[in-house]
Amino acid sequence: MKKLEDYIITIPDFPEPGIQFRDVTSVLQNGDGLCLAINRLQELLDGVSFDVLAGTESRGFLFGMPLAYNLHKPFVPIRKKGKLPRETVAKEFSLEYGTATIEIHKDAILPGQKVVLIDDLIATGGTMKAAAELVEELGGEVVKMIFLIELAGLKAREILKDYSIASVITYEGK
Image (cartoon, rainbow, N blue to C red):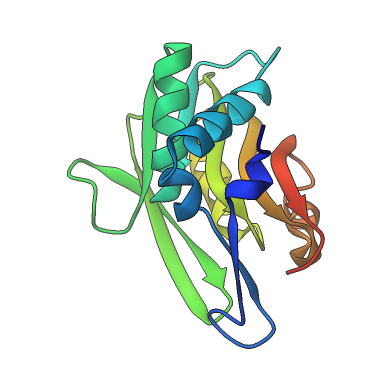
């Protein structure tokens, strides 16, 4: 039986020299790999009490929706600026080469709701920190952050030290 790591293709020197790009599209393109990924992510939520699963655009949607479906929980998308049709709250955050803004519908999280945040990969932690701040601005409580892949060398756990974090696969490098 294959391990989940066997479904992830590593592309050296992409998008720039020295980077080992971990491609999750190879997981999505294989039925067994996708099933294994969803099952392993769901295991990270064993014993976690929560009301809402929220995922960041776009691969947080791809992995979050099947989990929400399996667990009979609502799913909330956290999107890039300008993509949501109703009133939103927004958060700008730093990227390696600039800034970005994400948004959530103002009524997507109710005060007191316990929220799990999901994305495919945690690198620097900036996107997920901004997502957590949006949830908290709306009165929600982030009870867990889960990821398929963690790039430990980028030290996102330091930025997200106030949150419970779990990853299916951890790569030591960048």
